[in-house]
Length: 408
Ligand code: ATP
Ligand code: MG
Image (cartoon, rainbow, N blue to C red; front, side, top):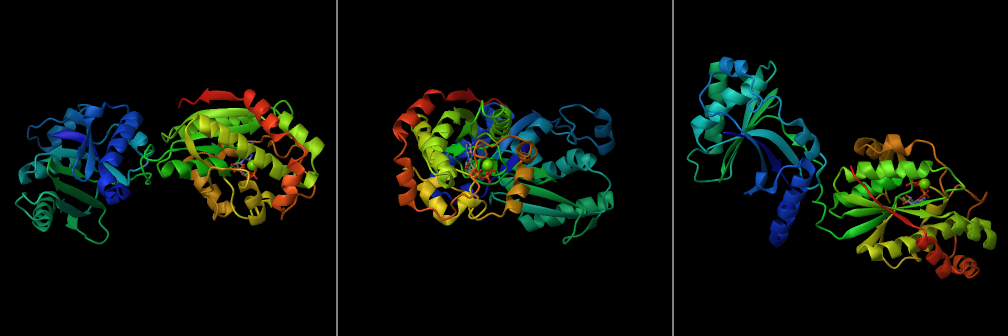
């Protein structure tokens, strides 16, 4: 008998011939997140199994077991660090702390009696949900459900309730054995990070861009953060915030580098040489161009921002088009159709909100014009840019950029 975590995936299952590749990436990511060795994470027909500890195999009754309180056999306190880590691994649809036994009815029943039942609080109703992936197993899943149900009902005086059970006992028969568990924990969903090429995300320190980064990572792309700051015009608060946000994003396993780019000199030139109403668009276009250079350095094949249609003046469809035109790489905007409230809810869920709302001077609020253009035309914006040596400005800005490895 073994104490394991069983891991289920959903979208990977649809990947046809690429499935093995996706699974190996998920296996690697699980190892990295949980700090277990690769040998402890098994790919096992339709699921992954993380081996944690051997459990005593002797037949013990419930009271004996409770008295033991051995750390390795204490099923009620599974390795919590592993559980927390697994919640943040993309590609997992759900997972559970489980007992792995031989695919044998008596062993399954014994696992329920010895390990699962003693870990439960008081309950009165239950259901069994069995699945038989290995058709060599003699009993059908229905037979298994009936027999185990009878056992729990008669031996422990519990009632079957198939619609609203207080406890569901899950039993999975597969080629490598049988898994028994009770708590199915929802996973982060998405696809394993590393199954797509890298994306450079423009991280502002606000609420939206960290959520955009999360969404990109969730689809399997590692990200690198690119932050423009106006130090010394502003304090270093935005830098500290972005570092902290990057650390939170890194805890999902998809970000390990942050570029900090001094933008004050470039802003000064834009302010001096161009019409005020186009300033923000000119900042954004320059940001995209610089981010694109960094993307090339880092082998990133796309850019991403936290923009959403109409959220602020620079994000009207006309202005987004003008911004886009500065980039060669695709610009991904995962939040394009989100309301601010939806973005805030997601920021809270992923843990970035509390950092994002700390005060800082946004680099673009410095020299903010009173009446920004809401329907800029590309030709006018390009006309303004003709007053600036963009290539020289990019070179001098990039020469000052700072690169940071983000550790969790
Ligand atoms: P956010 O909450 O992400 O700052 P926002 O609603 O404040 O978004 P804007 O400030 O217009 O919107 O920024 C739009 C997008 O441009 C941001 O989501 C981000 O991707 C990028 N961006 C803005 N400022 C910066 C910055 N200083 N550094 C890097 N990217 C930035
Ligand atoms: Mg902002």
